[in-house]
Structure formats: structure tokens, C-alpha cells
Image (cartoon, rainbow, N blue to C red; front, top):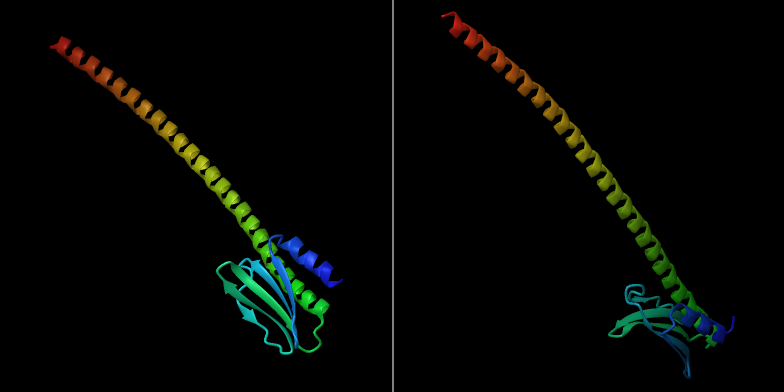
Length: 159
């Protein structure tokens, strides 16, 4: 790919970035900025005569690729693209992980809801059983009371 193709590729990934090429007396530098700070932490390859570094700024991360050895503009832009695409891999991994976690949260919420529904259903059934048991006991006590009352009346009448 040519430098122009690589610049387009960088701006396809991050449409709002500026790509600057500086051709100096002893080197070529390609700057890409602003980039997301969270995806492009500060780093410095310090691979003189060819390398890249990222610095953080108020407006975001600032990537620079440089070549002192051969002043190859195409290679410097390609190096910047490689770093930018590396950031995209991080961003894609982060988004995929966030989606996985969101799915897991939804699964857990469904499990909690099902567990709560099962628990409530169990409590309702126990309450119904207790109610039926209490109803039988009340009926039994009423029957005993009626029998005792009848027996008391019979004893009164026998006196």
C-alpha cells in the first residue's frame, strides 16, 4: 500500500484524526492525533533509527512514527497504521468482552428472577398447606368444642 492508502486506512479507523507527515533534514516523522487515551497508553519503542512513541495530551493520545535511517515516508506511515490497528484490536476485544459480560448479567438477572419466582411459589405452597392444616385443626377444635358443649348440656340435664 502507498502512504496515501495507509493514511486513508488510519482515518477509516479513527475518522477525526489528523495525520501529519514531516520530512526533516535527517528524518521523516508521521504524527497521528488525537487518539483515544484509554487505547493508546504512553509508550516509546526508542528503536533508533526507526521507531514509534505515544504521548498523552489534553486532546488525547499523540502517536509519532519516525525513521532516521532511510527517511522512507511509506514505511513510517505503515508503522503508524500498524500501531493504530493494534489499538483497534484492543478496542474490538474490549467491546466483545463488554458484550459477553452484558449477556452474562442478563443471564444472572434471569436466574435471579426465576429463583425468586420459584422461591415465592414454594412459599405460597407452604402457606397453602399451613392454611389447610390450620383449617383442619380449627374444624377439629370446633368439633371437640361442640362435643364438649353437648356433653356439658347432657350432664346438666342429668342432674
